[in-house]
Amino acid sequence: MNLPTFICPGSQKSATTTLHDILIQHGDIYLPAEKEAHFFDMNDRYAMGLAWYESQYFSGWSGEEVVGEVTPKYMFLPEVPGRIFESIGSDVQFIFMLRNPVDRAYSHYWMRFGRGLETRSFEEAVTEEMVRLHETDTVDRRRLSTDAYLWRGFYAHQISYFDQYFDTEKMLFIEFGKFVANKSMEVDRVLEFLGLAPSPDIDLEKRSNVARETRVPWLRQALSSGAARRLARAVVRSKTLRRKVSLAKNHVVSNVEDALSEPVTKPPLSPELRQQLVDFFARANEELAARTSLDLSTWSK
Image 1 (cartoon, rainbow, N blue to C red):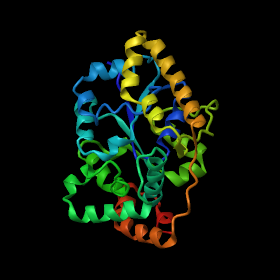
Image 2 (image 1 turned 180 degrees about the horizontal axis):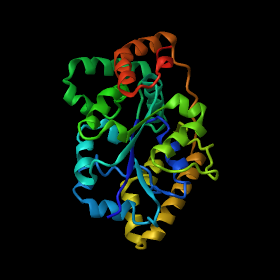
Image 3 (image 1 turned 90 degrees about the horizontal axis):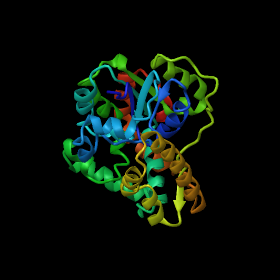
């Protein structure tokens, strides 16, 4: 059975799509054309079993040395690491993309705002979430709402889910700022971690998931819906052709979204609110630095 040898479980809004779009170019790496399989976090998909997972996302494999999957939500849910361990085993490798949680929350907010899913101001949203986080038991915090702008930024806590099942040497931690500043060096680190040689043919200038405000929210949701994907699978029976169609579909969806949307102009985050959030994450970031040995000093500035 052909299943992932590595997984990028997050974090969300931390260049995981860019990493996917870079690594998929490497001749020795197989990644599904459709990022985010959501197999281990969605109960209905997980119930379909590994054979279904393989047929839906890895049937186009043609001998690549490394097989991967990128689904940022995996990092956020505590049941996911156990499911991965039980399904794939302990040898799978993990790449964690970690962004300053203040900037990650702000980017997450504007993504949802641009999609028409958020109407509050950022300050209103995070203030309400801070209140909820103080009032709610830790185990249930992830189910408070679909936003979780702040709760998704407690990376050390989320990594601890994986520590229960996997050894540290199976994990690579990439700091978003360093990745953006020096993609070549950081991508080489990723390839070395995966046991692969650098590839001179990779285009590193991928910039994915730029925040945009859609003019037609229902059309965007229809193009990206699970129903649309299921219809495509029913119509296109050839697995090889289905992968080609998926790549073409992604291109078409991107072009349609560009035509029906415009880039969101993010106002600068007020210094007062930024400092409040820096203080809010201070202890969690100290725990993360100790756990990962990353230099996170810029996150406190």
